[in-house]
Image (cartoon, rainbow, N blue to C red; front, top):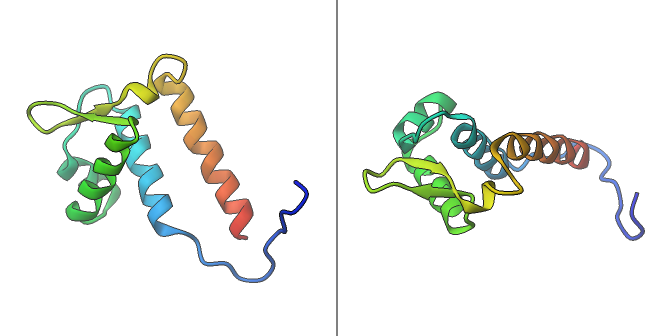
Length: 103
């Protein structure tokens, strides 16, 4: 454990926004074609408005990109050295780390 970082004890409240954002990212990078926000919302069982905001945030970070017909695909920050397989691995690792921190 890093110096100055304390492990939380007792019940923890998971950050649902982070979980939803990571799930959106995973949906985008694992798709073989651009996906719409409504499709991602249906796949995840989430509200379209929430997914739309999350995808917009991912796009602002360069992790997603919007096509002219409003579909979403992996952005430049999720390509090159961070190809889709590596991004999925990163998402899995971030999720595992988040679970360890909050439990």
